[in-house]
Amino acid sequence: MPIYIWKGINIHGEKRKGQIEAVDEAGVRAHLKRLRIEETSIREKPKDLLENIKFFRPKVKGKDVVVFTRQLSTMIDAGLPLVQCLQILARQQDNPTFKEMLTAIQADVETGTTLADSMRKHPKVYDSLYCNMIEAGELGGILDTILQRLATFKEKAMALQKRIKGAMTYPAICLGICLLVLAVILIFVVPVFDKMFKDFGSTLPAPTQMVVNLSNAVKSYWYVIFGAIFLFIWIFKKYYNTERGRLQVDHMLLWSPVIGDLVRKVAVSKFTRTLSTMLQSGVPILDALGVVARTAGNKVIERAITRVSAAIAEGRPIAEPLEESQVFPPMVVQMINVGESVGALDTMLEKVADFYDAEVDQAVDNLTAMIEPFMMVFLGGVIGGLVVAMYLPIFQIASVVS
Image (tube, rainbow, N blue to C red; front, top):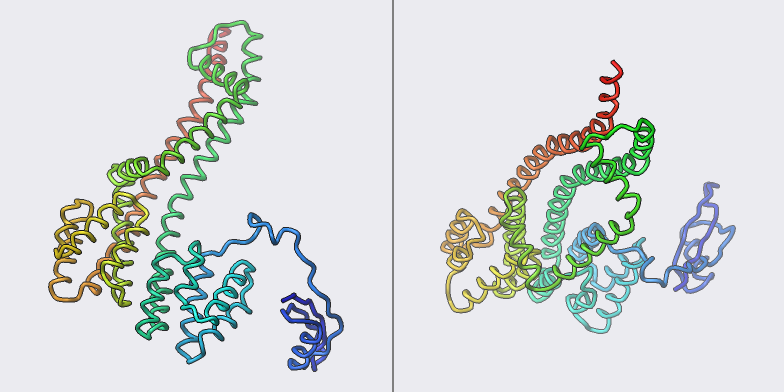
C-alpha cells in the first residue's frame, strides 16, 4: 500500500503532521476523521530511487529483533490473535526492510503456515536457534513464554557482544591514529628533513638513513603496499572460509596466550546459555546440540559439540564426551555432570552461563587494563623513535660547530 504524508489541525487548534499507510486518500481522510483532525494537505510520499537497491536498504539490527520479540510476547500473552499481532507490529515498524519481512510473515501465517516455518524463509534475521525455539513454543502451546526467553537470551547475547567490541575499540583507535601519524611523518615531514640534511652534505647516521629510506619507499611504492595489504586480507578471507583454514585459525585463537582465555570463556558462556534456553523451551537435546554447534562461532567448539551429540545418540551421558574434547574447563564438565545426574541440566547450564558471563566481564577488564600501557609504550616507541632518528644529524652538526 502507498504511504501518504498528511498535515492537519486538531480540535485544539494545534498543527499536526505525519505519515500513514492507506489504500487511497479517502482512507487517510477517514483515519484522520477518527482522530478528530481536520486535514489541510494530503499527498502521496514520493518513491525513493534507492529503496529497491538491496545495498542501500537498511539492515535489520539485533535490537529490532529483540524489541519485536518482547512486543510479540506481550501481545500474545494478552490474548491477541497471532495474525493481528504481526499486523500491528508491521504497521508500527520504522525499518522498511523489517516491515516488509513482517508483512510477508503475516501473509504466510494467514495461509496456514506455522510461524516457525514462515520465519525460516528469512535466515539472515531469524537463525535456526530462534526458529527451533518458536517451533517448540507453538507445539507446546507456550509461545509467549518462549518469546520471553528468546528476548532475554538475545539481550544477554547482545550485551556480551557489546562488551567485547567495547574492549577492542580503544586499541583499534590507538592503532589507527598511530598509523595515520606515522604516514604523515614519513610522507610529509621526513622529506623536508632529508632535503635539509642533503644541503649540509654530511653523512647521515644509520637510524636516520633507515627512516629516510623507509620514507622514500612509502612515497614511491604506496600503491604496492596498499595492494599487498588488500591481497593479504583477500587471501586470508578465502583461506578462512575453507574448512581446514577456519579450523586452524580458530584453534590458534582458542589456544593463544592472551586472547585464548577470553575466547574460551565467551564460547563456554554462549554454549551453556544457548543449550539451557533451548532445553527449558522443550527442544530435544540432540536437536538443541545441533543448533548450538552451528551457532558456536568457533570451528573447534563446533566440532567438539558435534562429537558430543554423536556420543549422546549412542546412549552416553553428556559429561563424558565434553571431558574428552579437552575444550571445556573441568569445572563446567563437573557441573554439567551433576546437573544431568539430578535431572536439572537446564538449571545447571544456566548457572554456569551466569558464572561465565561474570568471568567474561572480568577477562575483558583485565585485557583492557593490559592493552592500555602496551599501546602507550608502542605509540611512544614508534613516534619517539622517528623523532629521535630525525634529530640525530642535528645533534651531530651542533657538536661539530661547538
